[in-house]
Image (cartoon, rainbow, N blue to C red; front, side, top):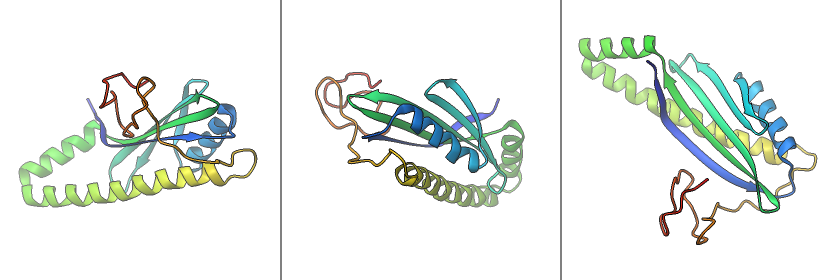
Length: 166
């Protein structure tokens, strides 16, 4: 069974003056041009996969777009999946040459982190700069719907009142 959701990076943005339809089209176009195979799990839920051969990982994006007051919320998660073959090769390398495996793993993580950060930054830049109706007036952090406390990008629950984040 592959190891999933390694090195997950998650970011959320609230975008003013946009429609969900426009954002889902722009998102699919951006990730499709980057070589991701896109699948839709709902009209505003997208999943994409791309094999990063240089790193030996399959990169996975999950994108959810939803109404948020009079704005649109975009929730983006980018993670890596290590397939069975890659996991076996890594385990054998760790057993045979532990120090080299640790060094290569560390370098791969740094490469992945830089690649993921650049991909996410490029995505937001493309969403905000593609012309047309999406010209964000502001990017505001998500807040708890119960108490209004600002939420961390990967929050599952509000740290102030404990309300589950949708």
